Amino acid sequence: MIQIDTYSYNNRSNKPIHRAYCQIKVFCDKGAERKIRDEERKQNRKKGKGQSSQASCNNAAEGKLSALPLQKKSDITFFKTMADLDSQPVLFIPDVHFGNLQRTGQVYYNTDDEREG
Image 1 (tube, one colour):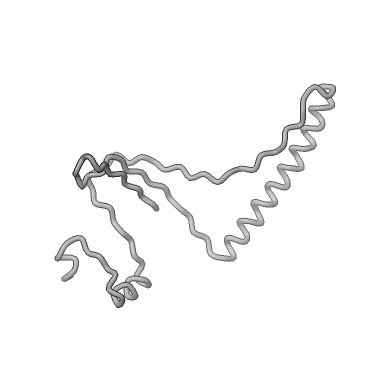
Image 2: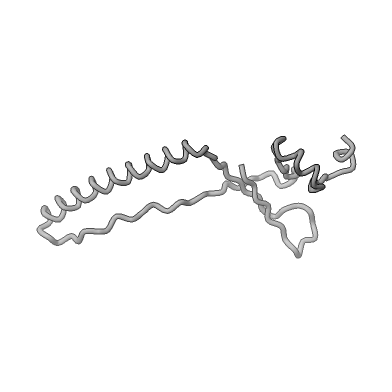
């Protein structure tokens, strides 16, 4: 999940004025390849069906309708607004990467208790 907090420079508060999130999906290489192939097949099927139905509509209307080109679907991500603006955001670092960050001194803590713990 990705969360985006928006702060106001004029407000001088640590509380965000807006918070939104979205869920992301991560695919492994083979899963991504299969997903891309499946999407291409679906588009080809839709393209074939769309062209044949457009041709029949054009014939039925005696050429009065123009054939519209099929538009490619654009990838859009919608973020959902969160009502909770009080809770602190959490930075997730998987254990695999956490040890490496500790060795390079790139781990940041919110409080001294977290550093000692």
